[in-house]
Amino acid sequence: MLKLYGCKGCGSAVVEAMLRMAQVPYDYVEALQWQPAFKRIPELERLNPLGQVPVLVLDDGSVMTESSAILLWLAEKTPGLAPTDPATRAQFLRWMSFVPASVYSVFAFRDFPERWVEGEEAQKAFREKLTQRLRDMWTTMESQLHPAPYVLGSSMSVLDLYLAMVSRWSPGRQWILAHCPKLGAAVTLTEQHPVVARTWKENFGT
Image (cartoon, rainbow, N blue to C red):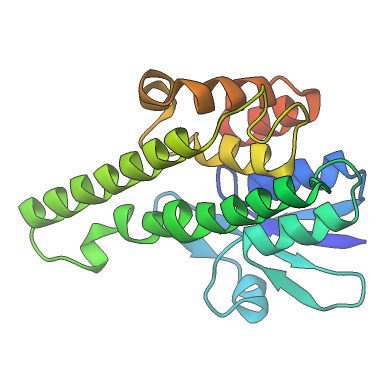
């Protein structure tokens, strides 16, 4: 039995959705509480010294971290959720790397400006610059991708799940729908899948 360490609304949400779509049984451990401050269970820091989720413990006891790595590993075991056509697969791998490198990574700085910048006004300006960075990354994807109707064509892939999750974070779904209508339509469609809808309701409330 796999064991997933996560927290509601965190990057573990997409791993939960993927595990359910792959019909892979797992135990879930709520490992990180956002409010009133970060509180981690000791077991999480033993498995991942960075204290970050998601963490997936495999059947043999080995540990996987990094949401994109976990998703790609699961996609290998789930026919239909990763493209096999060489040209489409190349784009799949491109954007599966882009999301954590250029989008996901920004939140470590944007969400905690006090860790990097001193002073309330400086922190506010720092946060806004990083929010603009996220907007730029979404408009870059919008200009490069041409959903039909899913991000990479007629079939939903794990990339759709990944983008649907990060679209719940800054700059926010309403901004994405207004400024990135193609991607907005694709993630909205993805969220209509019953497994995604159920998982998102548990993690995001809707």
